[in-house]
Length: 103
Image 1 (cartoon, one colour):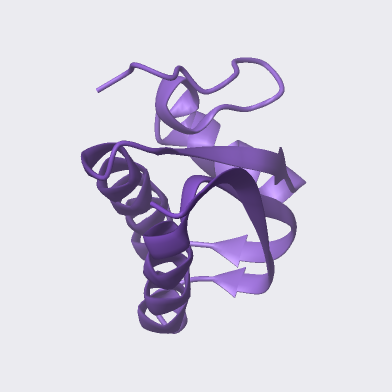
Image 2 (cartoon, one colour):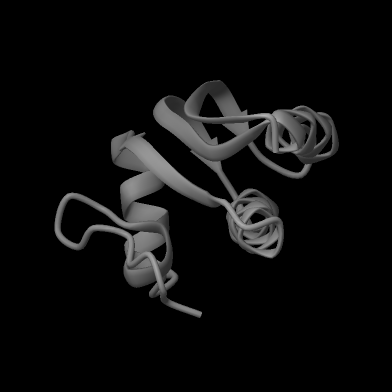
């Protein structure tokens, strides 16, 4: 990694199967140069299982590279999806921050 600073990427609109491929490419490119990636979900209006999987996959990839991924903020939609999927420990919500070492 060339930079250890946190790089924040904002997602607006959908975090769904229709956008995950493009978002994955963007996030992997950011992880190539930044050890810490913060994903801002405040403006996400829709999320599905593919979107949640992308978040988990990107978090895993960041850890494999010796970095980390955190959620900088949730929209009501993403917060509800994370809670319903039982992923509060992995992806954090206002009720449970993401655990750095959760598997």
